Structures are given as C-alpha cells and as structure tokens.
Image (cartoon, rainbow, N blue to C red; front, side, top):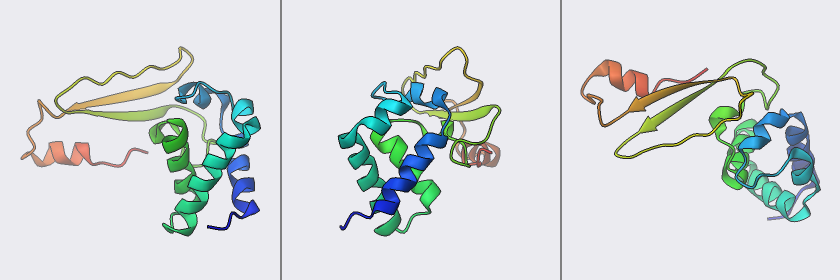
Length: 137
C-alpha cells in the first residue's frame, strides 16, 4: 500500500478535534500531544486508517473511530458521531454474558451507562432483542 499524506493529515485533524478527556480512556495512557508527537504510533494510526478507507471501503469517520479503538483502545461508544465535536452526555451500553465487565471512568466524565446482562435475558423475548440491538444515539 502506498501511503498517502492526506490520510495522515486527516487523522491528525481528527485527533486534534477530539476532547482531551477521551484520551484518559486510551490503553497506552498517552495525552493527545504525546500521540501526535510519537512518529511510530502515528504511523500505526495512519496505516490502520488508510487501510480501512482504501482497502475496506469504510466511511472515513467510521475508519477513524475504529482505528482509535483498535490502536489506542478508546471505546467507540465514548467517541461522538461527529469526531469529538458533540458536547453533552455520552451513552455506553455494556453487554455482559457469562462473566464480569469492569469499566473505569474519570470523575469528570458525564457518561450514562446501560448494562444488559445476557445471563438474565430471555432471548426469545422480542423486547429484549430490540433492547440489545438498538442503536445508541
């Protein structure tokens, strides 16, 4: 794959426009500035993003959200649909099946969490299925 500068520029712009508080959720514990200044990490983000757009024909916004999740571990649900520009409460749906899920949020996070426990769910019930597979706005 030939790396194209416009994809690197796009990913840098997306990162610059993300709220700083989202970077508290990344698996590497890096700030926005640290990520932008790390050439190796930016190369990984660039490759993942460009590959998603060019080879998998993904929407650029989706490709960015997926790249941030895959490379940095930032949950896609915490990222807003507009690349980090949407203020207000973020909604996270956690689906639990046969185990325990632990989530940690900073004190200043404004996050509403829904938990769906599949162990207690009646999968034959249409309402349960609709609840599990609804789109979160």
